[in-house]
Amino acid sequence: MARVFDEWSDRALAGVAAFVVAGSVARGAWAQAQAQPMTFDPGHGPISGSTRYVGMAGAFVAIADDTEGVAINPAADAVRLPYSWHRWDFGFGLDVAIGAWLPKNDIYNQGSSNAGKSSALFGSLAVVVNYDQLGFGLAAEAQRNAATQADQTQGITPTSLSANFGVMHASLAYGYLDGQLLIGAGPRLVGASLGGSAGSGLFGAAGVGYEGGFIVKPIASPYRLAAAVKSPIDATVPGNSSTVHVPWELAFGAAYQFGDRPLNPRFVTAEQVARQRSETSEPSKAELKAAEDELFDRYEKRERFYLLVSSELAVVQGNSQAGVGPQDASRAAPILSPRLGLESEVIPHILKLRGGSYYEPALTGQMSGRVHGTGGFDVRLFEWNVFGLIKRFDYWKLSVAADAARSYLNTSFTVGFWH
Image (cartoon, rainbow, N blue to C red; front, side, top):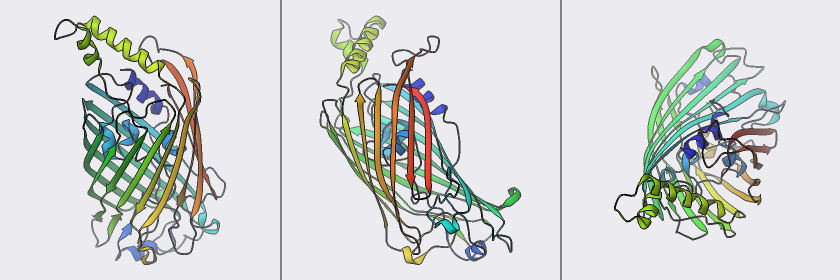
């Protein structure tokens, strides 16, 4: 239950939202798209996610776990957390990110002259259920972009546009070799819509694809290796011949942790510890409680200082533009986005710091890519067990993250429990 309350509080205060995939749309783009495939592209543009994901610059495929990892790597469903001590366990989480803080906001790197006024929101809801080395994950992500442009006053293109994009991930994973090799896979469902001013709808579409991934995490070793793949999705727009295309994605990652704090501890349950000390085959409740206390003491006494270095190379299908519009043939080659993130508990039991950088590829031949710098921290606050509902992990924390680049700034804040 401590994990469940932790996951709820760590993200519930962030709220439910949606995030965006498109910037401003040039006049006539919709008319042209009637006869051409259109692209909703979640793989391009700035990253969006939890405070930890943003703070580490999206270098997450190798360290993905719990509800934060469901949408990143399907194998993350089977990662057992170091403070999960029962065969059955579950957690749920809620995340949000808000972009468009700057007066001249250029969320999708179109150039300041075309940026106009736009807003971006991101939200996700995820659930993970574990039984021994088996894990099931379900995550729903939502994106929304609202854009306006002064010259969109004629023809079919309205003076304001909103692009909505949703993805549902459902995956099953298992930890082989005592949890050292995690493999997961499942479907991902996509829904997209484009709306005009005054709430008018221009189109809607839906489609299904598949995703899979693995994580290698040898017990007692300070490193992890991982990869994830997401298939392309083509959805037909009802009533006409156009389609919505979601490109394929690949991600390769590696992580290494310096210091004495273990990155890949062995999964041990309270039932196992209690059976080792019990004179009967079925431990009593008192024996299980004593085993839980022992595992908690072990967790609290472990080395706190560490330096985690996580890297990732994201590869996304080219031949597309950000948001809504006809495909750009000049971008046929796969697009690469290298990412690097750092994390450390610099003051034991009090403060964790994160930082990183990633490259956002250019979406059109007329623009150049831009380098992002990210950062964030977790700080332990006060102790409160919520009138006895929260046990063991009852110290609260504040989490903050920021992502900055040329003409772009995104920040996120969450409140949760310190681990």
